[in-house]
Amino acid sequence: MSVLKVNICGVEFKNPVITASGTFGYGLEYARFIDISKLGGISVKGISYNEVRGNPMPRIMETTSGMLNAIGLQNVGVHKFLKEKLPLLRKYDTRVIVNFWGKTIEEYVQVAEILDNADIDMLEMNISCPNVKEGGIAFGSDPSMTAKVVSECRKAIRNKPLLVKLSPNVTDIKPFAKACEDSGADGISAINTLLGMAVNIHTRKPYISNVTGGLSGPAIKPVAVRMVHEVSKVVKIPIVGMGGIIRWEDAAEFFLVGASAVQVGTANFVDPELTLKIVDGLEKYAKSQGLSNISELTGKVDLSK
Amino acid sequence: MKGIILKNERLNDKYRLMEIESPEFAQTAKPGQFVMVKTGLQDYLADPLLRRPFGVVDVRGNTFRLLYMLVGKGTRLMTESPAGSVIEFSSSLGNGFKSVKNQNIALAAGGVGIAPLLWIAKLLKDDGCRVTLYFGGRNQEDIILADEFRPHIDKLIITTDDGSIGEKALVTAPFEKDAAGFDRVYACGPKRMLQAVSEICVKGGVPVDVSLDERMACGMGACLGCIIYVREGEETVQKRCCVEGPVFDGSKVVWESVCR
Image (cartoon, rainbow over all chains, first blue to last red; front, side, top):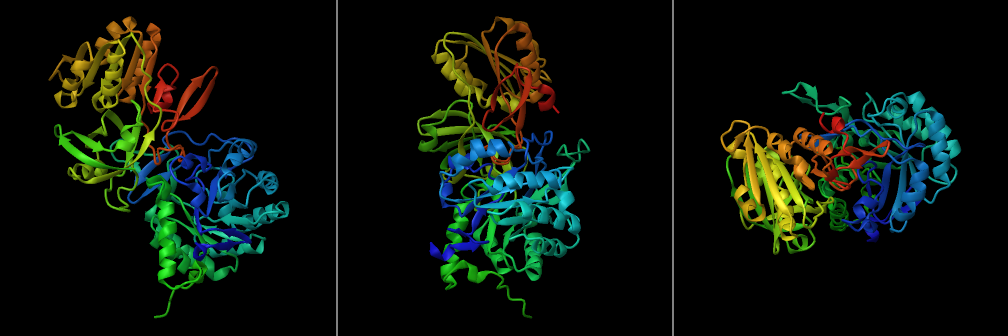
């Protein structure tokens, strides 16, 4: 399957299909249902320094071709993750990306330092979760804050490549991507969920307790494709594209607008086997297009009139 | 996992019963478990997007049955699946009911909550238990599968809100009168009914297992959308309805977090 082998920020992936953070638990949840060693990589649930119990219920709601969630970055904390989850996940032949976040810059740095010395392949900084009051979105909605948190973490991370996951909930995503590149990010992942809301017309109450939530699924794909295209125009570092990918054709679109790999999120909930079907579909497509490697597709969208 | 639909039978305007052939699932399933059914029934149909959880009614040879209530677009699409068509589902999800021997058991069901109780009723009866079923609904339309229970239970008490069949009462009314005489209770139905049943059981010192339902995206423990709060000693802990449930000790559930 060498046609699908990609190198992202110096790390070789057997294929460019990675499961997105927050949609694949710690990987182990799915190991019962699919061969997770066939995946290019797994981006695990966003890790913080301390354990976080998340938002009150209800936390999810299905919308037209998508879903809203306000889980609230629930996770077991970095120490428990390294002790109880990572050793089990490491038994599988797939790359491990650890998504991480903090409530303050200091906390981002604290978690980053610990993960930098752990047996993982890459870090993914989450500055874009719309569901927590502190941290998260605050760092992802002001370019100067983005630059600050990325550069501070960059100083702390010496051994691993650093991806920064961008928020779509901004007027213009380009300054944020540029701020990441200029502050030392090795790559960009885009996009996180779009801020949304759904209301029950009978009770007149929002469906989820947090009132608003992050919208994901096929409904957001055109927005994500547009944003990855915009980001690719302003940075030279690799982009991992995501947002509503449910078929291999969706993944191919992201490559064409500038992605070097893709993450698949909500599709994991729809069908745990979809990621593997995307891997197969991309391989057949690459061969049918006469490509020697899928990366030849990156940025090859034809914008001529 | 895939199965072949053998029957997709209309029970009335509100409920349907689907029989699916799947030796792989039928041989491993346990009473009280559930499956997540792909409701789109076409490859990659994105609306409705998510699979839907359904309790397994029973397993017979290589087949299993699902009872479903027509609620929205997903279940409407299920009605359009004819016999002979293929259906996709994720299985075997969750922990089920544990059977006991030679005890006096009550089953308490509300509406579509009857679904996971038939199989456990059969096992309990086979294991020497005396089984009483309390079955409540809004009206006669909700009282489904009752005849299938009769060979596996000793007593059937039906209640409806409008009195169209059985006693005009909530199911908890007759149950409360008898509760203290049971060794164990298994219940499934609306959350407020399960809360009431659990409170009656706690008061009478009767162990109670409830099968809960929460909105869930994956059914596999990854999305964390289906959290149930449960008391463990002095602590309140989080459990995933899909993995650690759907059956919980009703005396330990934090009902104010479940009945929102």
